[in-house]
Image 1: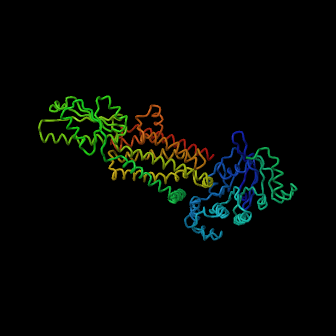
Image 2: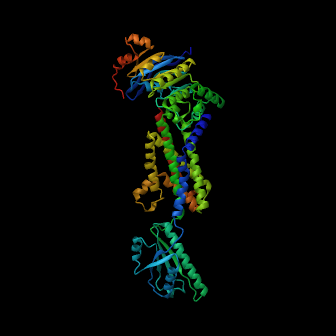
Image 3: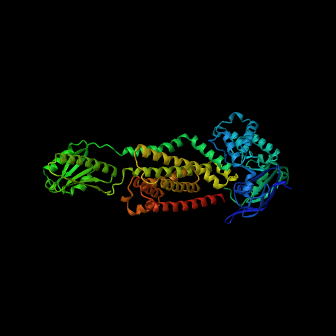
Length: 247
Length: 367
């Protein structure tokens, strides 16, 4: 039954009189790549913050990795990975030091950290830069590394908040290779993005407008339903309905 | 616990990696002590002296000649009336006025002859130096008189400091430096280091991790607490063994009061970090909002006693003012706990309020 790694029912977040997230309900299955789309200000980040245990829901229910996001936030945090839109590793630490730090924060054993570090650096082809300061890496490398760090502790779900901002299409493609590999290992990927070509890479996509989920399906079926050639057209049709101004 | 240690290790690594900042943090306090210490002149050369001699007899002549003959003093003026004394100091080039009693020579055998040394207390260090040198000159003269034992003589030397009658010790700067340095390291560095995590986005990652916010804060504070303690110890060692500053009171109380003050400063840093979003703003807020008032109101530069009442009330809000005052009492006056109980209580109250407010603010940001 634990097929649904993320489960929400009528999840709502209000700030005063403003309803940022308005009764959203959806499930994400294990190993799925779930695209979470929406214009700026549609409520994506707020929803994601609730799922990560960073923000307490005003109403409704949500479970991530089997734990209640309102009452078991600490347990939720242990079983998820998180990569924010701003690149977020320590620039003044070496690559292996970043890995050891995050391994330690997630309570991994030293031996395990050492083994995983070797494995991951080989996997990325980063062995030669093990002792390099993160600040010396190109942005694309940094983002790959940040993603690898976010799944370093083998979480059940990884939340990616616009992970590929500001990099070229080739690097984005490589980044998505990493995402596919993680999903193949059974890690559920929950990703927000601005790039509609990336939406095509997802197993299923939800589109948020004004705090509500307006559409949720596979990219093919969404395109068929909205009689659109690309996800971009689908998105435009839905986003046009928005009443809220984007920030 | 492992989380906490991993994070503390990372904090230390980042601090040690930032060589320039580290160097400033470790060397600056020592430089301050040395500079302030040696800026206080310990040598006197040809200090300018004015004399008021209503008696004008052979004995006063001899004393004046004696002062003139010493390498330390040059008599540049004879005053006609005691009213001129204030004006002489205001003109600024004279540091000491020697005043003889009337009928000096005839009063000498009875011991009623007296010499008053008046110095400008606005610079207490210089003033106490001048008077003690002058006293030295006078007492060696008296010793000679006694040896020749022409007459049983006694000259009464009275010292008076104008404008700073207590003649506060020249060592007062050591507690002041400690207050300023602790404020700088704890408040400024803590706020900058927390805000940096916000700025780079790593704070988001940390908050989304199983690491508890209290651990994040504690592990941020641990290295700066360690650095502060190191600084207190080095400043004290330097003060005692190089500058010869006494520590008369209890080391235990010194440690207790310092620890309370460090907690106050750390929570000020935490509070600032919750109020601003960029490192620049944190630097400005702690620099202008904390360091400036600390420097001005600590009594390090301007004596608090000579401030207008309104400014003294403001000074009462500055934690460093209480810390420095307590430290002066412990180190220099060597009094026991009852004498600095007020300072300690104020600091404890400040610590309690600041920790509560800072923690609440930090929690609000998380929600």
